[in-house]
Amino acid sequence: MDVNQEILRIFALQQSRAPDFRDNDLDRRRQRLIALRDAVIDQREQIVAAIQADFGKPEPETQLSEIMVVLSEIKHALKNLKRWTRPLRVRSSLAMFGTRAWVRQEPRGVCLIVAPWNYPFNLLMGPLVSAIAAGNTAMLKPSELTPNTSALMREMLHKLFPEDEVRVFEGETDVAQALLKLPFDHCFFTGSPAIGKLVMRAASEHLTSVTLELGGKSPVIVTPSADLDQVARSVAWGKFVNAGQSCTAPDYLFVHEDQQPALIEAFRKVVHERYGQTPQVQAANPDMARIVNERHHQRIAGLINEAVAKGARLEMGGPGNADTRHLPPTILTGIAADSQILDEEIFGPVLPVITYKDLDETVAWINARPKPLALYIYGKDRPQALRLLHRTSSGDAAINTCMVHFSHPNLPFGGVNNSGIGKGHGRWGFQAFSHERAVLSEHFSSS
Image 1 (tube, helix red, strand yellow):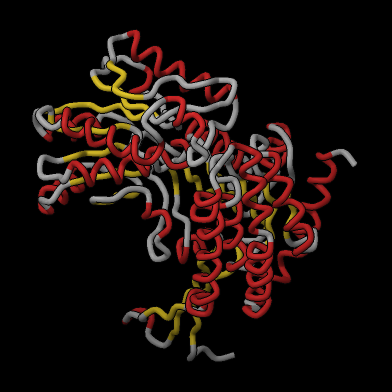
Image 2 (image 1 turned 135 degrees about the vertical axis):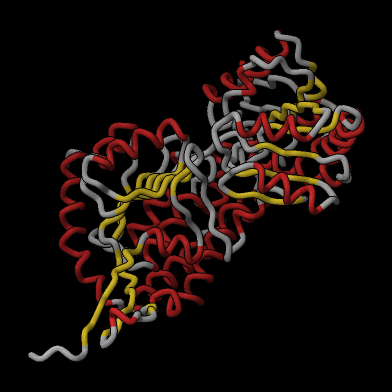
């Protein structure tokens, strides 16, 4: 059957099925979540192998950032589902005397989930957990850039769920476009701001609500009171895990001009300890993921080369090897203001370091650009860190750490404006896939 016809057929099936899910049958939702949890646990090795085949991601990274995150999301939903679905009683007012009012959490209906390639398992399954917890049916589009993982998820989910509840559609851009033409009740998209605009434009044709988890250039501000060794350990992990292919990865770093030499030396020490002291050792290190494909490798290498051509200093690393898609941990200093690497989201293991004389310079720089997905501040002066938070805007923020806020079960995750619309994870993911229905009941009216 033609894929477009199959998409229409499944959409019609799920539309007819969705009303059955409005009965708030929590046992049925729990059964689905438990089945998904058990399948993930049973197929851990296959998940690791698939992601390894797609872009060389080390097993510890896959276990931590793909599998454990999804299992934690399921566990959290199972624990809190009854509380999340409980009707919320609201206080009356004098004008509403004689009435009772409450808010019901109801499934939105048929939902579309479009996931990216950088965390192919986590970023498809995580939103699916929220969609199931909220009582929806779902049609899913994984990335074509990670075909092994996409095929594994398709097989897993098609075995677990009937087609009128959950279905996966693999394919290129034309499949995504066919899906986006349909009047879904909600669309959850994770990807770049540029594609997010196209998704939002398509959703507007049907007034479909959207959650957009996008990206942006997440800055790091190293204040003068920071412990530079701690900064190097933390930022190096956040920047180089998954070869920098993380939407929340630190994109560029500010440090006081007097502290830059010491910080660069601290970075060099951490990189040598974790990945090796020579390019040859680093290239053979299995703990460093590869860039997802040759096109992305060439793009990142081009950003490095252009910055160096304009006078940037290559403190460590370089363009790497296009044949193996390896890019070593790379740090640049002295970057010209008009370099593309300061405007384009890097999405690779390359960290531009920018010096400042006064922290006001960093605030002005950040506020002059689109709002980032995350902001990271390092320093022992807590009031100063809080002042920086108050003077800037970002989807989320962290102090003296980076990226781990994504995994906190009781925090919302998402961007603001250019870096995203809406929030996900935990209760916020449940709410994204739920409709808050207001109900007012009058007691004293005669029949």
